[in-house]
Length: 176
Image (cartoon, rainbow, N blue to C red; front, side):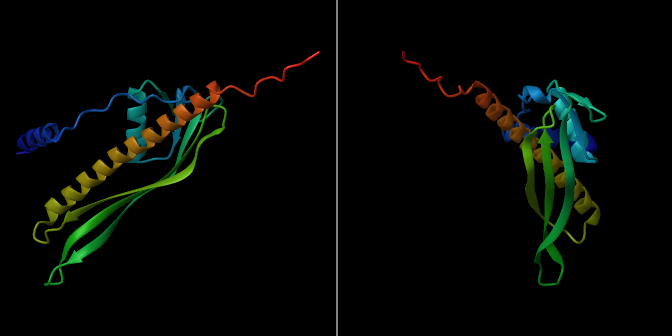
């Protein structure tokens, strides 16, 4: 049964146009990074950054960028209740706060918050299936959050590179 479900999931992913994303082009000042935080988001970020060629360090230190995740939490809200006073729809919310300092402890990304959510139908007669549905939604939100953070890191790298290339004011000409 689980093999059939896995095969069906893979077929659905390829049918909807899903493709694995390539490695992230991160700023040069983030080639070594420590991720301050714990849990599934931190582990997923570590794996993704490592696959992009970044060295993920176990401890902070000189010459090591710091990706700080002080908050990463799921909450669930009731959306609709049926005529029999049973919940029929929920929303799973994922709230993450993070900031990034480069290897010189200069803020690369100031503290910011990302909120994501997914809605799902609830079957009061299939509580086991519902928990697996919530677990899958949470894994999906973690994957999406990793991509959102990587997009912000890539944008910060492009912004940093543009600032490095931008010429300063032209020197004043001297006339004699």
